[in-house]
Image (cartoon, rainbow, N blue to C red; front, side, top):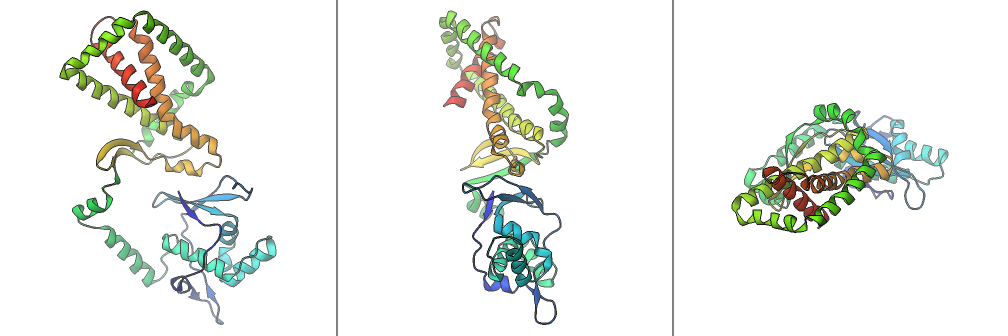
Length: 313
């Protein structure tokens, strides 16, 4: 999430050029885009309130402080002088027209203002064309991290959410704790057999099984993030593959978590992936002791060991 500073900066020359004539020498601020949404956020360390500004077109979120919120609330007054005068009269904040112009400059550079003139349209077109680079040049500039969205999962997530509510209950947590203790006890009783299962890696098929187990656990990891975000009312626009220095990994777009005013649900969403993998490891550890020798027992071993090691490492 990007930050629109609480201490509004000095306006640039470009910011002053954003103003349009309104007669009698006064000028008006550029209109804001109608699709922008504003959500209350958490208070700062000093107790001052914050808000989250959502740009749905780019799915970007901006955190704004109290001065910026009061200015935006009076944006429709038109001129920077009128907005600043109203903020000073109706709040304890001391802002001036320069502060309003500084915010206008940040909004303009973030493409959050409406394209109301030919120059605005030309600027947006130039920005669009600048983003259309040859794939080799784009890869050279973005090789450190980039995403490839593969799927829009909201329909499935909405269908699954009512059926997985039990996984968020205290009873399920206590059940997992009991299964963990029982699973560790049972494995300790068959420790030699558990250790012998590592012989599966003596053959290349064991590494294929490990890869499949890791892939399965990581898919569930991402669904843990996605389903938890959906439970909190957030949209998950895409799931796919991200490349970190060309190393592939699954990702889930849960940026809408920034709309939530409290930090606690955001932490729940962030931790849901690891929690899902740990639950899978507990179940695999428990059932390993009851499975007969064969592919299923090896699969449970793969899930248990790989998930414990990767998740806790």
